[in-house]
Length: 436
Ligand code: UDX
Image (tube, rainbow, N blue to C red):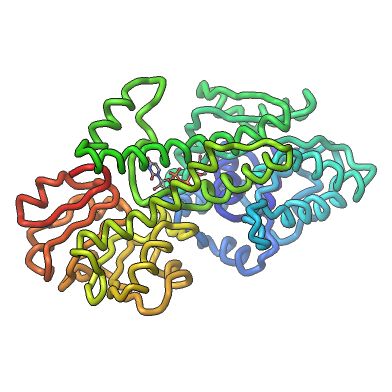
């Protein structure tokens, strides 16, 4: 199959590259010339494990090309995927900004020649595919096409594995012909017994939001339960095991922490709430999850302050991890961006380390934060260590070495990575989330 992928952001690049790995011929299109030049040179603008090798391999084998010109990619394509960004609107109202989607629809329309399936890959509110269809018809009344929705469920840091071994593929279609094209594109997964869930376009669009909203609710649920555990002296890690082994509940996404972040959950929960309001409905559970997530970040500030004896003023805090999760350099909506400025404002000195996210973090964190290249150096002379993101390299720290270099022995583990006894046994004060 010949596929045009519009947008070489996270989703477009991973999806295009994995399709090429399936054996399809992909041309990725982006308006940003610098980005396309970089990609043509074999450099990857984001950090995603395994992506660089896969891009290089498929480009060398001629199945993956990059261009800024839609005319090179669209006319021959069996399917055109739209994978441009849908950030939260700058109006600050929580709506998804669909400007890039509609612009892509308009621009690609004039290049359509034979029957083509136009697939929304970006996360978009219900009704967007219909708008895309209308725009294409208006721009090119002769065009022979169908629209479809094919939401992605990729986790950053594990995107290639998620793509290659998904739990399911959801396709929202309005004709048998377009369904056939999409089934053929995903044929390699089908052969591996991946279920393909074929739905209406609106159902597929809403499925993506519902999936992310449910996961956000699950995280906020366990974060709230963690607070109750602290209040009554229970242990949330054991509790999560106790409920997670019930297959109706499931053990995933029951890890308490400093709150969810990233490019999806915060944006998509807001967009879903706005969408629902337009229909005169409300989603109170999701509103609560969003509120709990904001409160969780504030709670972490208090936790750190309390661990330091009631005030962070004049204290040096070493922070391990800045990104919203490990194995990414993405800082979008990372809890660190709320928690650290609050500490800084109250007079703390912050020294931070992150294996991949420091350059990106400099664009978001206020001045005055000291960036340190090494996980041990950052802890030297600190009054407390805050483990913010559970990067593998922080999972087995040499605690004796840490002890020897810190000023005060306070370890605040916002991801419950360590067994409390392994630190308290060395004389540290240990503070986790939802457990003594
Ligand atoms: C998410 C969805 O998982 C994916 O299906 C969708 O397509 C895009 O959004 P991603 O944003 O990459 O993927 O990260 P994810 O692994 O889902 O984690 C999101 C946030 O939740 C992170 O900040 C993470 O630390 C937090 N989280 C996750 C928890 O705090 N506890 C958990 O148990 C799981």
